[in-house]
Length: 196
Image (cartoon, rainbow, N blue to C red):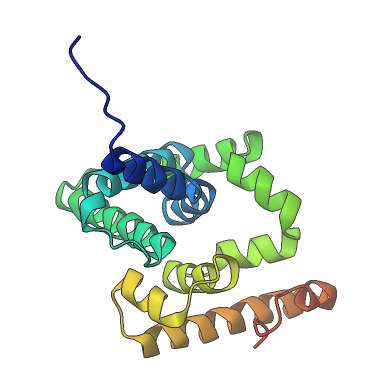
């Protein structure tokens, strides 16, 4: 027998850690989709996040906010991946990429799109998709994932004032886009406190 499974308190603690971490899988995947905008990349990002979390589980302090800890790992992993990708420039025919993206978007819906279509009005989804990444991330983390401003600031590694500004400006962008569509009923569907 190569491995012997012990039933020590450490094993019970690891099981509890893994169970709690896995309970945040859907939220992490949703945020990964928001960041990467690609199903395969989002899956890789979540997998890398869990791998890093398991490797660093001894650094996690029980009784603290595991959800915020995992989202911070996810965000940092995403930024590191983007930095690494930026160091290896490639030549791309942007017109071909845009045509291919339009063809794919017209023919295939990602799981996130199916979920969001079921839970968000189309105008609200369009408004979210049109927002710059920084604003979309901040609004998503606050209004959907319900993190505090301090937790978001720590995750994004920006001052809390910047987080508040991004959320405020993001909400105004959402409101402006939705009211320009003439559909005020969608604006009323935003969570209380989300309207500019």
